[in-house]
Length: 148
Image (cartoon, rainbow, N blue to C red; front, side):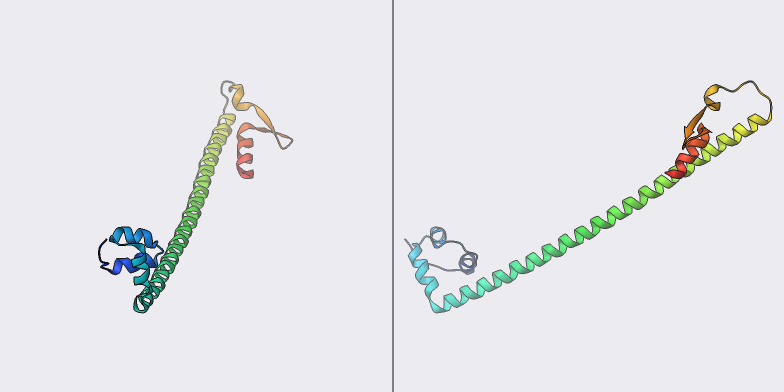
């Protein structure tokens, strides 16, 4: 074996909880040599300080992760709200365009009833039951839109 040449990484790794045997293998010494080294009062103080520093760094990292996750959750909620708002606007636009088409069809039907023409196809004149009443298909579509 060889003589121990400690560096800053040795204290950091031991403070992080690495075993004496794994450190000894990396530094080319016996684990008992490291045990004696870490038992020295000045090294023990440095080791305690390194442990405190490591805990503080991990705590700061946890806080940063928690803040990042909270920000992600906030942004996700905001995106969902915006998507819901856009979906509602799209539904309203769709309702308006359907209603406009139906009203235009009703106006065309009213104009065609005013002047005599050849008989209309039965599908335009047919009626359906809606809420217990007989109504035209166009009227039932408008009523369904109003209930929607």
